Image 1 (cartoon, rainbow, N blue to C red):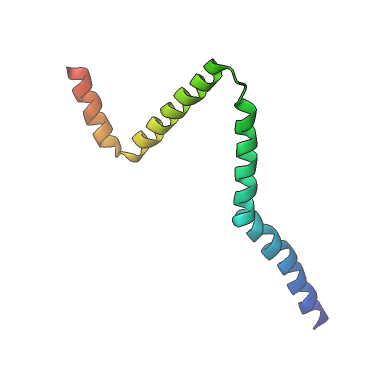
Image 2 (cartoon, one colour):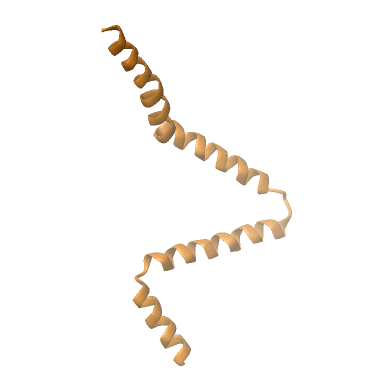
Length: 84
């Protein structure tokens, strides 16, 4: 009986409180906090740095959008664009 309680205590401590909280809400809060801190380090006040961040973000959004379009449609659009 004591071994079962000890095992359940270990499972609760490391699985439920550790892994679930790390992946769950607390993990997301810590991830957003870390990412916002890293983004804050990019804020130098130098306008070309802001322009680079904006342009990089636009390229990233375009890239993600193109990944969501089926590949055959991209090929058709590229073929039509090249044939002009």
